[in-house]
Image (cartoon, rainbow, N blue to C red; front, side, top):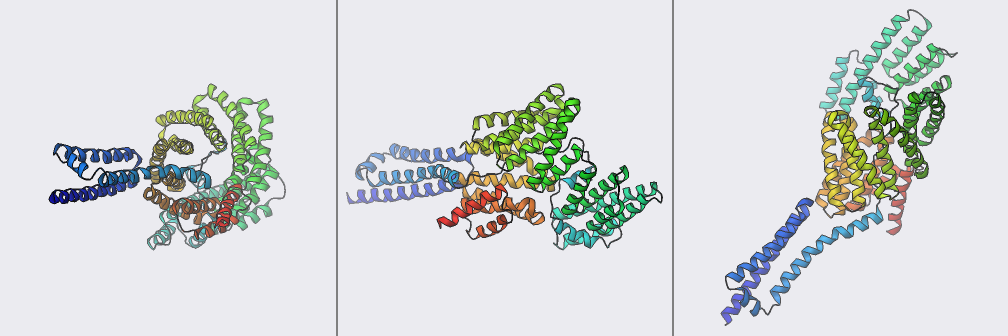
Length: 545
């Protein structure tokens, strides 16, 4: 009898240890696996327990096992392990509510129209889309200005790169800039020859000399010395000076020259162009003023020539709405988006190939607004219509429209995450990230910010689902990208960098001392709604400590 009891006890200990090992193994699989495998893991865990008892039954050991232990120790142990394992499943659900209560903000992607009448060469398009701090780029351009040929400059850039003084991104940017600079100098020389020995030719020579040495102040002074009266020649000189100043990334000098252009040629197009430039630099109030002037003029022109100017009215309305949204002025943003969408639907009926992309753009922006207002069904409808349009366009022209598909997928995933539809959100984020990674290999300057944005959103989603290893991996990669971008262009990316720091502290348990760095950054942008919102979050954290 004692031998039987001893045997049963041994079996009990073995079963308990066996089940404990199973629990540990499946817990590791559960918390390191992706969501598609989660229910498989749970079913396997329960199935193994069932199979184990089945083996006991067919070997004749089940009844003595249960009888001799009086259904207590082993059964309770098994029940305990199952409860512990299943309790981990609801942790993610609880975390969801905690996340929504503490940290509700996330990155959305609104779209700005470029002016329909501006067409840039390839190198100029790259420069327009390059966000970089002028102090950093100017430092390297000054060092390159003493070198006489483009080959010498390329060799110097390569040397900096080989010595780890600059990264791949900055190396590529510098090469593009010096190539474009050479193109501009060549174009100026051609124009100087065509002007012979006129006063205009002399002014162009001075501009070329200033441009060569990278002195934006001299470019500005040269223009004001040259011009004393308004004529066509002066406007042309002014526009060349603006282009040269922009290539040197001298934002303040460029804005001053743009203001001079408005004095001499106050057209709707010029108001729009400077509004767009100011908007990219986050000067919201000044950009708003320029856009409103442009809209006023375009409305008058559209009454006379609707076919020509209605597209410009819609473009300006869309960008105005984006600005109002950035300032949390939802009613004004909604009004502008709806008017822009109405115009674009009419235009798309007449010419779908030209205007359907604009319809999709406004649908996306309107959906972002409705999501911000918690109008989820309306937002979902707009996103899905926009995605349908863009997928159709991407089949015909993937290079142009795949970025737009990725953008809609990201925004749709944000909505589904807000609705706690986590599997759907994960699927959309992963599709968007896959597209952005491919695009970033070809054009890192433009698409790396979007890679970081999607990684950050994925990190938040994994955190809400209690999948911390995946969350930390995505977060660290996103933070590294955003930190580099913020170092190159603080004004554009520092608020996003501060937000990433907040994400790490609030959701991933990063050191709270990091909040001081985020706070220091955000205080520089006090008055910008997004910065003020994050400062308030930091204040609440500090008060609760």
